[in-house]
Amino acid sequence: MVWDLRGALLKKQEVETARLADFDFRLRARTMRLLAPIVGVDAVWLVGLIAESDDASILARLAESLRIPSADLARHHAACNVQARAELVDEIGDPTPHRLA
Image 1 (tube, rainbow, N blue to C red):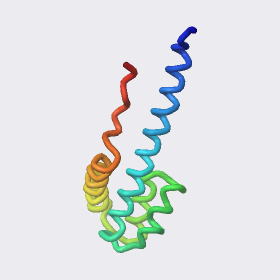
Image 2: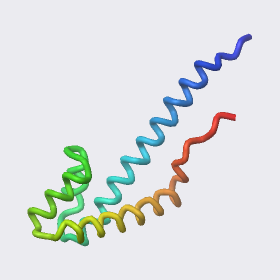
Image 3: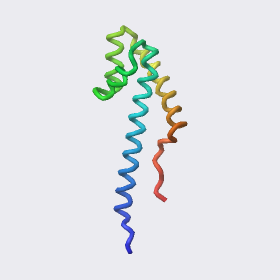
Image 4: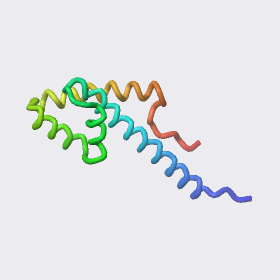
């Protein structure tokens, strides 16, 4: 019986990529959910925007429509991102890739 190193590495890459993509998506969604009450918009609507565009575009759109200074909005977004990351690490663990032993 031969152990397929290439196959194991490809499988690890597939699993790690999916796990990291899931963490990134959850981080973006939770950040927007935490940001929504701060800026006074519906959380479901704001979280839904992550499917349409990146965070910078969403923040620019919010700043323009709500007439909030971009610097203030960026500061709130950064604080929400830190909080969301801490919550996710507590819930599902650190997103650092697992080493192949």
